[in-house]
Image (cartoon, rainbow, N blue to C red; front, side, top):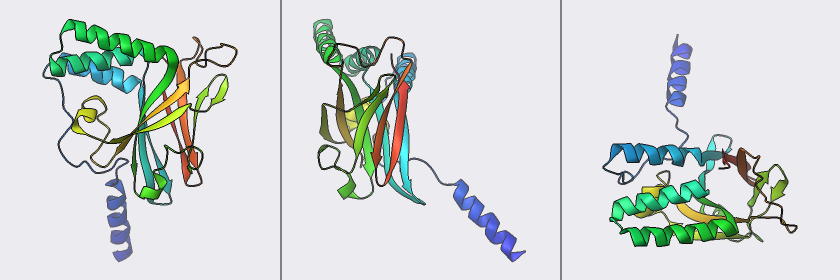
Length: 210
């Protein structure tokens, strides 16, 4: 009887485990217009995935990434316009800048929550324990740059609500085309995957291609 009670208690504790870090601080900002908020969350979910890397029962990192597709870029700019009451000329200026970046790179906004700071070295690809690649129907492609944006802020969380207080944001850019001009993400691709791999483990973040 006593053994059965211990097992029940253990199962109860395990069932209470979560796959995300504890939420700390203020909730992410949301639009007052519920329909616009819902529309943003839907497109955000389409281009976002989350994963965890474990060592036994210990979590090494939590990570999430959002693919900066053309449609998501526009949604993000228009969300900013709603929050800041931006005039139309400024919105068009921001959209033009996003289109120019989209023409150059396949970009991901990546967030990480690393329990041990020494494993948070993504911005140094040559010495990092992590190898980041984009998996497409054409094979693996390595990033042209991995830029550490910095600690998550409330403003960042307005667009990427998976970012917590202790998360760090990165900008991961992959080339748009191969050397022969072939698009890295072909029109026929429905999804793409960004993989993070290291001796600690690996995570694959799969999102819609467009």
